[in-house]
Image (spheres, rainbow, N blue to C red):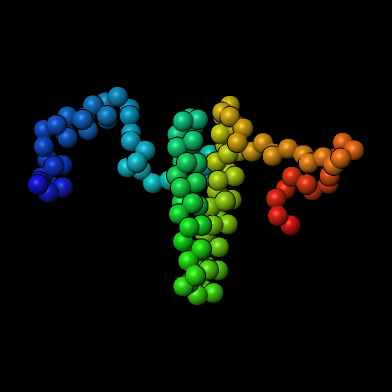
Length: 126
């Protein structure tokens, strides 16, 4: 098996890199997620970064459920999850501003037997 350094010098790799550079195509997997969401100007790119944030949140939620973690580690993971949730909200706002789908729509209202709206009913756990 060839090493990564050898693969990077192959003709096919260099051809694809030159085609990507001339066509203006940049792979999102090779880039870091931008800190400022306002720098992204296309809906597909913003949705890609939102998806990456969702994967990170999912990974950390799975990790936080480990019973062997200390209180300090749980707090750290919780802080990271909260930061990622804020970032997810910013990406969703940016996607909506660019004319993409509205991922921030509410879950709807909850109604009682008489058809009246229950205050705070659709907001999850309290």
